[in-house]
Length: 214
Image 1 (spheres, rainbow, N blue to C red):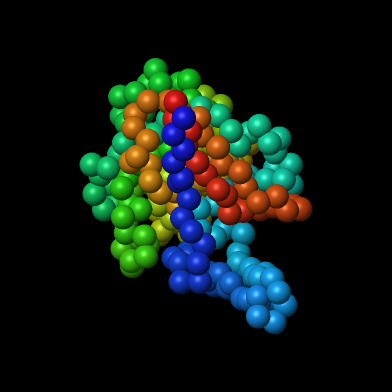
Image 2: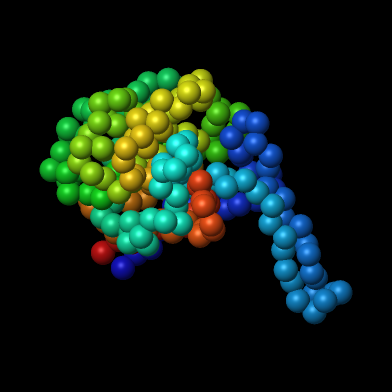
């Protein structure tokens, strides 16, 4: 079995959503003074490679900690959309091209190649994003989740977060943002595991996402 890490490392200088403070990693205890090392982490719940539940946008909807843990593991499929350029949409044709595999998957992960801009201003620019038709498919096919290698499932200009709202209004689906290394997986189904940090009334959380290839 081959394991591929799909997660960006959390660091003090990492990219964060515009308007959000960057994480702080402060030495709380040191080898020299205390005989051991411990770090105080201060960060927002949607930092780095992270997961959004319906409670991110809707009060009284499902929080991450109330999802059964099996919701975070399942069959994944990477769909290659790396031919798209700035501001172009991930249309339903990308799913149609691999429809038989997509129908069987629990998680659809869209590879746009945008992760190569991680750490640059362009990462916050006009990245590819999914259409309402794609969102409809995800809902109707009862997917556990959808993921992308960009900073948001909505375009950065959409302050209303329309795609998020469409997915979360009535469905227990999770959205995974800021994935990386999707190009290493290939086009065949694989086992996807994305475990969020578990805290009370979680509106979102950093995850460690991995692909397990047979």
